[in-house]
Each structure stands twice: as structure tokens, then as C-alpha cells.
Amino acid sequence: SEECLSTTWESCSLCGKKVNRGVHFGSRDGVFYCPDCAKKPVCSGCGMPNDCVKLEDGRDMCKKCRATSVTSYREAMEIIRSVRKVLKDEFGFYTKHDIKYRLVDLHELKEISKNQEMELGLYSHEQWKNTEVTSKSRLGMKLEETTSVTMSDSFYIYILTDLPKDKFIEVAAHEHAHDWMEEKYPNIKVPLLCEGWAEYTASLINSYYGNDYMNEKMKNNDNPVYGDGFRLISGIAEKGGTESVLEFLKERNNEKK
Image (cartoon, rainbow, N blue to C red; front, side, top):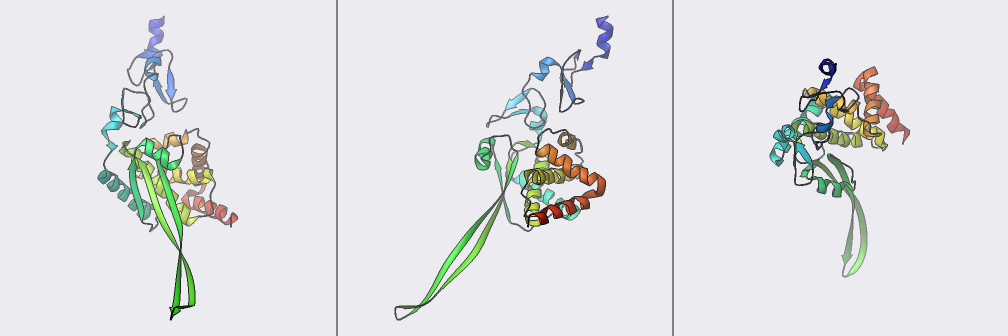
């Protein structure tokens, strides 16, 4: 009977109803939602349907993610300093760059990145050439002219405001991984490798902070750059550890010289 069969049906993770059809989010074995709850707004923090509040920049966010969201620059910098220290002390991924940090909303981030897709952070390195001409003269006559050229560098990391704390930690690690890779392996420009490395580094930080559950989303990400890149780099690490990843990147870097 239907009453008997209903005892074997899956329960919706949001409303708890047992139903014979619904949607799995994240993967075929992901979190299950009944048809009604699956239609709810998808939280920009956890990526799951829920009863959400609308942020000023248009994003939807559930109450659970909202409860830990990073909204102040002070809290953001405390997390960033912690992540940067762990990257240095535990994994040896560190640069001495004087990075400038900014919390931005979705509209600002899209304008800065020139990318209309949903991004959570951005690393930017700007470089200028400064030319200075010095001349020596005597009695109104030019005797000598010297030209000197120097380079100036500015480093920026932009992170989306109102991210849940665990996600903010992940994004901070991801963007610092770009900074480290650019200095260590400057010849690697392939997005698959750059983003794969950044995602792999973020997964190490997730595990360090006890957030291994977030790495499952990386493994199941169907994005051809972020998802495939992570699976490529993490696959190398599974066989030979992080050292094998660094050797792989070193070889790719030398190929581009």
C-alpha cells in the first residue's frame, strides 16, 4: 500500500516530509529536498534552498549562513591574518607582499573583476613602470641627462562581504594561493592549473580548520575550470602528497620559460 511504501521514502532535509520524488542538491547522493522546498531561493552561502533573506546586493542567504556572515572589516582582517599565518607556518605558502584587502559587495566585485559570473573573491597584482629623467647643467647649458626606470607593484585581495565564516576562510586561502603561485611559478597562466592549485590550497585550509565537509563540494563541482582543476591537482596529491604537486607545477612553470 502507499502507506506502507511511504515509510521507505526519503525525508526532505528542510521540511521533514517523506515524499516519493524530489531533488538531490550537489550530487546524485546530495542533500534531498521535496519538490516544494526545492523551489525555495538558493542560499548564496551554502548553495541550498531555504527560507532566505535578501541582501542589499541581491543575494539570497539563509538564517544559518547569515548568523556567521563576515560583515566587518575588523573581523575580516582577523580571519585573513589567521589564514595567512597558517599557510606560512603549516604549509610554507607565504609571500612578503604588502597586500591591500577590501570587503566588497557583489556589484563592486563584478565591476572590478569585469566578470558577470558569481565570484566570491579576486586577487589582483598591478605593476607600473616609473621613468625618471635627471639632467645636469652648468651656466644654462645641459651637460648630461640620465634616465632611470623603476617598477612599482601593488597587490590587492577583494573578498565578498556577508560570506559565512567558514566560506570566508576558504576564499581567503584561495586568493592567497594565487598570490603565492604568481611569485613561485610566474610562467603558469593556464586557468585550469591556477584555479586548481588555489582550490587545492583552500581544501588544505578547510581541513586544518575542521571544515572537511566543504571539500566535498569541490570534489563534486562540475565547473570545467574550478572543478576539473581541483580534481587534477588533488589527484596528483593523493598519489604523492603536496610535494608531488609542487614538482608538477615546477615542471609546468619551466616548460613556459
